[in-house]
Length: 133
View (spheres, rainbow, N blue to C red):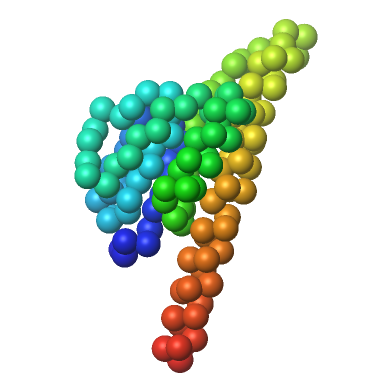
């Protein structure tokens, strides 16, 4: 793993997300955890950003901040919740919140990280071309 691998992990403070962070750190990644709370674990290459991904404005701000500070190469969108309800009981606000968390946050993160990802891919492509691969 090189220093060029910067991974954003949503929901990285607990459960599966915390384990994903741990394993990525073990593999040599620089990891940015996006979650409502700071992770219990600490590591020199673990950066915690507290954000509620249901809040679109807060997500956009956090994504822009992260993209300005780190050349993101990987995104693991692990954050998620379930608000179970039978069809007659579904509340539009719940549906909107779930769509923002599961789809909107992922789209915002990808669109914000894409320029760095393209630069990284282009640099890797150029290196491979120069090496005759």
